[in-house]
Image 1 (cartoon, rainbow, N blue to C red):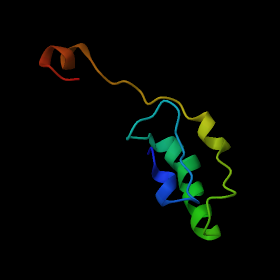
Image 2: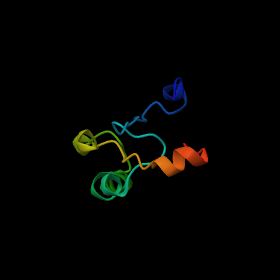
Image 3: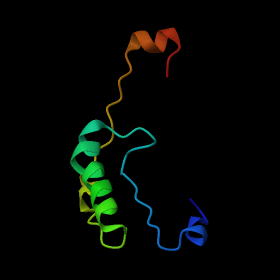
Image 4: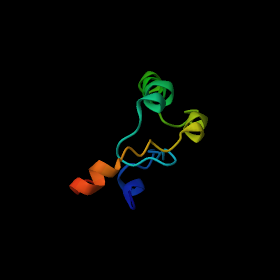
Amino acid sequence: MAGAQRFWPNGREFAVPGAGHNINGDIRAACLGPLAETFVEQASAAHLDTSCLAGASAPPFDLTLQDVAAGAG
């Protein structure tokens, strides 16, 4: 997102600790959904309470020895 502020000067960037592009359903439902709703209702990202993001945990790593032997991962 380097340089994005130039195009969206009122924008904000949020990071979910321990997550990449796929974010587990718990944090989506408990935090990201309400954040998106509030953003739409306020038409602004200026006063969003993002403290719920700190409670996010890394998604589970579901890889079995059978997956490794088959070349997955």
